[in-house]
Length: 126
Image (tube, rainbow, N blue to C red; front, side, top):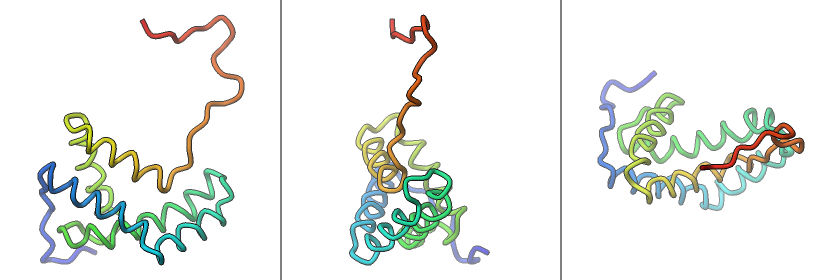
């Protein structure tokens, strides 16, 4: 239920970078760091539990920042902000780097399955 006064956010790449940096900084705030640590402890590095415990906390932290920039204070606002950031990533390496830092704050590092590629199969770049 979005507020009627909330305008759809239209941020330039530079403005989006500032907001993204603020979001990343918000994760460093002591109260948010504690919230994220508790959520990670509850998740025990299990991807399903990460979605259950960590993602909602990370979403709330982002919402607290982006609502000041015209995004709705709900999951849809976070998705719209993520899409906006994604749209700038290809042309702006700094934006891509900041986006990667944000994702690393709440997504566990992805590891390949131990079996790797099929025997005889090669995925070498040409």
